[in-house]
Length: 104
Image (cartoon, rainbow, N blue to C red; front, side, top):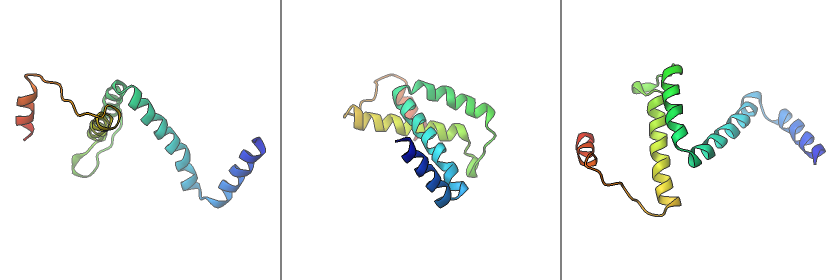
């Protein structure tokens, strides 16, 4: 088992370039973060706040890390409602109607 892993590692370093090889640990960390956010979505709010404070990223059109994080958490919430819960349920509150009117 260990010799197979060492052989695979040696082959990957020869075949793949250093840029692609760097993406493998980044993809694994991203996958672990996704699993963590699926189980504990409240951690995402803390990450959004910290990213907004400390990561100086501004993309085209004024997008920054906080906007991207909020869009990701919103899509994760909708995905969880559809796939995991198998029903779309929005909590009824008096503030929902004015919120939708302000968005539209």
